Amino acid sequence: MKIQLNNNQFEYLKSNLLLDRKDFAEFFNNISHLDKHYIDIPDDKLDEIRDWAGERLQKSGFNIKYELTNDGKILEEIIDLFYI
Image (cartoon, rainbow, N blue to C red; front, side, top):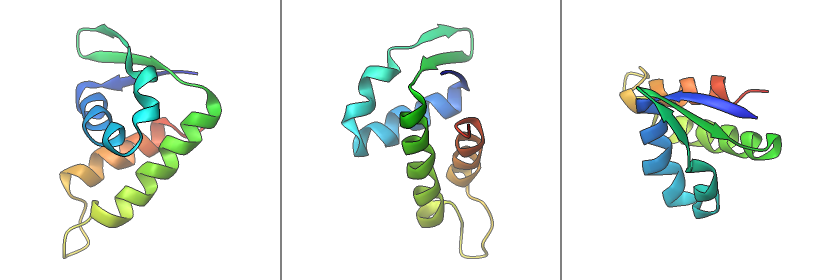
């Protein structure tokens, strides 16, 4: 499935997901146009990324007042984008 990401989402995934899951690097040879990045990922890998984002959201997506952090906002966007 082809997914469109904005700069923040794309950079977040490259900076964080690929640290944890180097096996996803092959999917990040993207096509970019202005501030949009397109990645083509099999459906089963979309599920894995969504699960990874959900776990990360629980660990670092909220501050002490249980408000979304900047990372939390991006993670929620990623979870929504990768929901199939």
